[in-house]
Image (tube, rainbow, N blue to C red):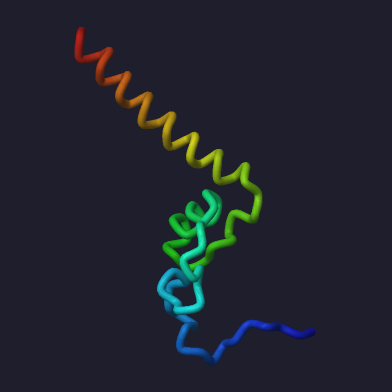
Length: 78
Protein backbone atom coordinates (compact mmCIF):
# COMPACT_ATOMS: atom_id res chain seq x y z
CA UNK A 1 0.00 0.00 0.00
CA UNK A 2 1.32 3.42 -0.91
CA UNK A 3 0.44 6.62 0.89
CA UNK A 4 1.21 10.12 -0.27
CA UNK A 5 0.88 11.73 3.16
CA UNK A 6 4.10 13.27 4.44
CA UNK A 7 4.44 12.49 8.17
CA UNK A 8 7.76 14.26 8.58
CA UNK A 9 7.02 17.81 7.49
CA UNK A 10 6.84 20.96 9.54
CA UNK A 11 3.22 21.34 8.40
CA UNK A 12 2.07 18.17 10.16
CA UNK A 13 0.35 19.92 13.08
CA UNK A 14 -0.16 23.32 11.47
CA UNK A 15 -3.77 24.17 10.52
CA UNK A 16 -4.33 23.79 6.80
CA UNK A 17 -5.41 27.42 6.36
CA UNK A 18 -1.98 28.62 7.53
CA UNK A 19 0.07 26.42 5.21
CA UNK A 20 1.82 28.20 2.36
CA UNK A 21 0.55 25.74 -0.25
CA UNK A 22 -3.14 26.12 0.71
CA UNK A 23 -5.56 27.85 -1.63
CA UNK A 24 -3.19 30.37 -3.31
CA UNK A 25 -6.01 32.96 -3.17
CA UNK A 26 -8.48 30.69 -4.97
CA UNK A 27 -12.16 30.93 -4.05
CA UNK A 28 -13.42 28.50 -1.41
CA UNK A 29 -16.68 26.69 -1.89
CA UNK A 30 -19.31 26.77 0.84
CA UNK A 31 -18.57 23.15 1.65
CA UNK A 32 -14.84 23.81 2.05
CA UNK A 33 -15.54 26.80 4.29
CA UNK A 34 -17.86 24.79 6.54
CA UNK A 35 -15.36 21.91 6.63
CA UNK A 36 -12.65 24.30 7.78
CA UNK A 37 -15.02 25.74 10.39
CA UNK A 38 -16.12 22.37 11.81
CA UNK A 39 -12.61 20.90 11.91
CA UNK A 40 -10.96 24.03 13.34
CA UNK A 41 -9.07 24.59 10.08
CA UNK A 42 -7.56 21.09 10.04
CA UNK A 43 -9.26 19.67 6.92
CA UNK A 44 -10.95 21.33 3.97
CA UNK A 45 -12.66 18.24 2.58
CA UNK A 46 -14.22 16.74 5.72
CA UNK A 47 -17.75 17.23 4.39
CA UNK A 48 -16.87 15.94 0.94
CA UNK A 49 -17.08 17.81 -2.33
CA UNK A 50 -20.85 18.05 -2.74
CA UNK A 51 -22.27 21.56 -3.02
CA UNK A 52 -25.41 20.36 -1.22
CA UNK A 53 -23.63 19.99 2.12
CA UNK A 54 -22.39 23.58 2.07
CA UNK A 55 -25.76 24.90 1.04
CA UNK A 56 -27.44 22.88 3.81
CA UNK A 57 -25.27 24.38 6.56
CA UNK A 58 -25.57 27.90 5.12
CA UNK A 59 -29.34 27.54 4.88
CA UNK A 60 -29.51 26.20 8.41
CA UNK A 61 -27.54 29.17 9.71
CA UNK A 62 -29.71 31.68 7.83
CA UNK A 63 -32.91 29.97 9.01
CA UNK A 64 -31.71 30.02 12.62
CA UNK A 65 -30.89 33.74 12.48
CA UNK A 66 -34.22 34.61 10.83
CA UNK A 67 -36.12 32.48 13.35
CA UNK A 68 -34.33 34.16 16.25
CA UNK A 69 -35.07 37.65 14.92
CA UNK A 70 -38.74 36.79 14.31
CA UNK A 71 -39.04 35.14 17.72
CA UNK A 72 -37.66 38.19 19.51
CA UNK A 73 -39.84 40.51 17.46
CA UNK A 74 -43.05 38.53 18.05
CA UNK A 75 -42.54 37.76 21.73
CA UNK A 76 -41.33 41.24 22.71
CA UNK A 77 -44.70 42.62 21.66
CA UNK A 78 -46.56 40.48 24.18
